[in-house]
Length: 139
Ligand SMILES: [Zn+2]
Image (cartoon, rainbow, N blue to C red; front, side, top):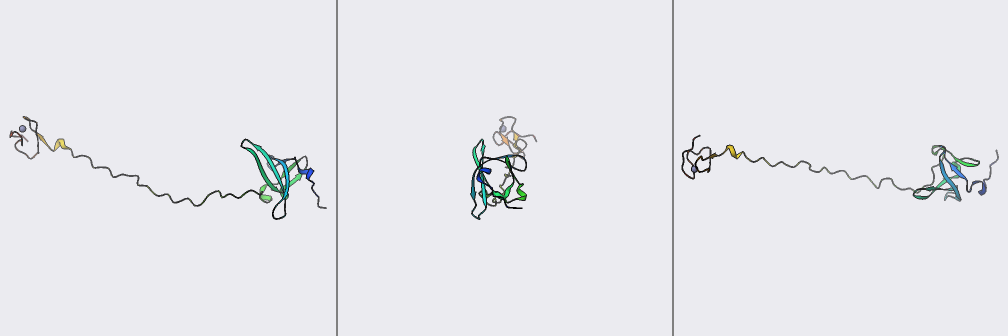
């Protein structure tokens, strides 16, 4: 086996297809990562605009009419900017007092008073005579 030198022309402008036969994009540039590994720049047109992805050269499974990528588990992860998915642990939810103390129902006044049949004054049930007109109240 002799190591093969890949020329730019073999890569540039070629379609990149991942292991699921999904089109990733087209190779627009070649570069070298900070640790000395060759990197291809793959651009794809999305509804949101042009998207750029970077893949290590050892992520390439085969180069033919198209460039085939290996599954991510078999290769190094693509160079993508690391953005934390979560800014931090969510603060514990503070239980809010959902239940309000219900106000006690008003005392049933209708049963607690005796209406004077003559003047209509409200008398206590224990009253024997009307407090207003003095009429004798019948229990
Ligand atoms: Zn009365």
